[in-house]
Length: 390
Ligand SMILES: *Cc1c(COP(=O)(O)O)cnc(C)c1O
Image 1 (cartoon, rainbow, N blue to C red):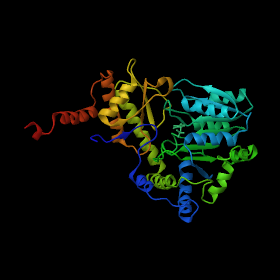
Image 2: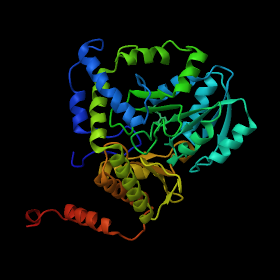
Image 3: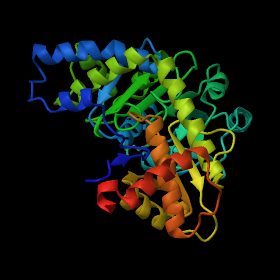
Image 4: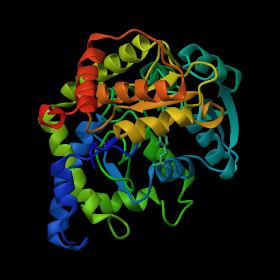
């Protein structure tokens, strides 16, 4: 109660008041005119967000559902795909593809490493049967930004579809679908879009739609051709997640107001702030050159238990951050700064990190000017107000 709870995780993220208010409204019916109006309002906003002239489809599922929809609609069993495995979400691409009986070739990267266009070009040359490249724009498990723009230059002139999980990139850092030659771009509601979890969004290029028609429907639920027909008349195939879509309409208005350029600029600045702050706390960063703009992955000093850092940060500062994933669970802290987050949240995140480190026995760096301000706050809090001391 004394601390404001700050959700600085790489999803879910805090919600703006405008979005929370619309989420609280009573139901409207998904086949009636009021809902059609919401959908009509959403589509141009989604096309602006995705940088596409194609229809952007809302799907009722988490982000992984859209990954599944992409794989099953774009590729037939037995087809070969190249998966960029730079972390847990790259692994997820492989697992989904294998579960659908695709043949998978993996480009496995070290933690913190981004793929290069050269490596993808070589892999495609070595294996001409590959029909798709499956990649994350931002690999959230490590905080790495893959060079999707450069990958688009490799795939666009080949019979190879570029399928991009943009879940922690769309609305956070530039990922214009049409301009970059992306054939499938998808995202989830709970990362950059400032919405609760449960909604995914997906768009396909013209040639990807041709491929979907050639493959033929593989699913009853995730039937993208049928979903597209409904979307063109401003509905969804099954009962719509009505309140999430109403929230999306508001969130897209906020993006329009701020402009994508303005949002990217803010995200870039927050990333610089988080990276500089972590470095000034004497900490190493996991992604050195190709880093995402929605979270900062920080390596802890050897012997420091990340779970203790997270616990102290939450209990003493009200700041909720995430640990690493897989084998980095306790050795990495992920400070999320995507969605409805600003400089004061990042400042709170850095201070919580310092507090957590001190509690876990890993803090020894000198104070910075930001620290001085927070220090004054803490001293005043400890010492109490004058009447208390009288
Ligand atoms: C969060 C995330 C996912 C998983 O999304 P869910 O909504 O949990 O299914 C997949 N890929 C990336 C890059 C993510 O950041």
